[in-house]
Length: 315
Image 1 (tube, rainbow, N blue to C red):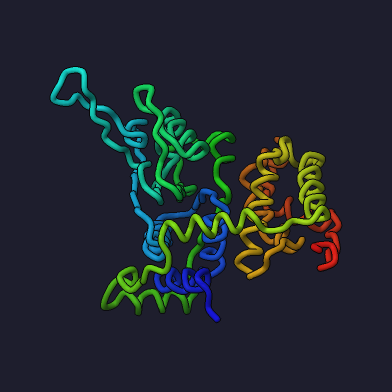
Image 2: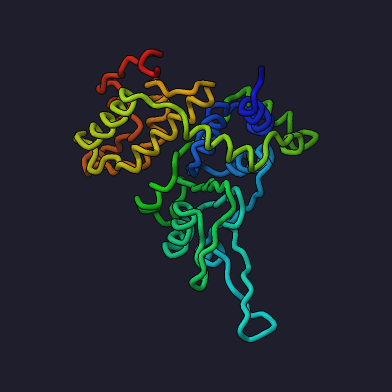
């Protein structure tokens, strides 16, 4: 019987054709209460993906186009004088929503990007000394274009670390592009997406994901993978304890999508690269040789033995 996660995937895939793996990974991140960074060239469907999820999940949605003149108050909001000289009225910024599409985030100044850090990590904004929580759930889907560097700024490691996963959608294959052209001949597939859940359902599912069982052997596996990134000669800075926690959360969400109430090592290996590649700092030699972080992590997966778990261990 089709459950809600299957229905969510089916609805989003009405608008995102030929990218089922990407759609599933985004939903995995949402269920783990994490943010998503989409790094790809323009026109491959990043914005469509965000809108499709907002409609299928029944979440309030805001889009902010980051530019060089974007300011922190665009994100956090600001206060304006009221009718009385001592009164101030808060005007919400773009962060006061459930799903925020931060378009071309790397075009904003460092000051503006830093304003997003508190929101992403603490789920709150501070304006004129007053702290306000953002609505729950709160998910950021940010995009950046790696093809052009004019007017862009590299995201610092501290900001990259706030994103649960980094994904690339890539171009559609031949048959998928034909389907895209056909589907858009007479209308917009986004208009066909039906709402499957609401914010209360999402919060409930996130809580269920958090409660999934993780055995000691899986914890040991995550720890061994983390330690191996710190020993690798191609990596100057391996993944942090916060990254290891993110890997654990993503593994739980992957198990949830697989309709299990416990995590197996295969869940960890399936999300390892997407969760950790953007958190690595490569050595100078690796950067000079343009070594792919995902390849390094793939080699680490081969090197670290995968534990054998059983139902007896869960019991």
